[in-house]
Image (cartoon, rainbow, N blue to C red; front, side):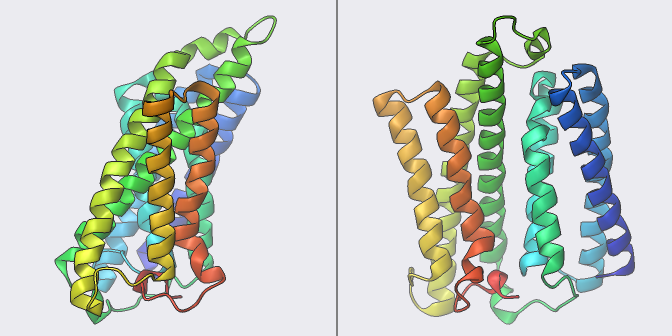
Length: 278
């Protein structure tokens, strides 16, 4: 890691942890007044995170698109920016951070435990298809993460509404109907960007390996993830899956994306994808 990258990386991780603790406190102790301050703190962490990415770019000469550490660094940034964006546009959605922040903290910690050393970009990664492929991959992961967070918020609010005396602090969040619709919209956006990601990756694979599809472990899990969310959309549109079933489905479906990005090489070390190499 570059010197300034290391400093701002840890600043971002510490600020994220403090903000996450504040959001959890807000939910557990039913004190929504804390949430706007934690959301502002989250923005500070995102700024430090951005500086860390800039420092790494300056040190390596390329954006952090390869290797587990860089993948976690950039992926976490996309999720945080997505959380800030929706929370800034609609203050009722600031509570999504209670689910996205733990995910980002674990991702960044896992990435750091791999190999955060500065390495030159591999020759196979010096192509415009890399940026198109990975950009849409992170848009998809960000959207799926927001869908998961909206599902968590939906289940929490639904549980509160069934209490004999509902906690009025949950009135701060969007209605159950609006959260249900947001889950679906996030999934649709993620599915579309996921599709573009796979198409771009196939074109890149044709140039790199001579075939559009090679049944590489990462490609296979990417297909499983894509099918999972495609089935989710089908169940919603055709069979009317909503509310609790949809919320639980998107929460569980995110595991397929995490396995694709970070879990495959725990059991397989023959992936052709350079970003999966330690």
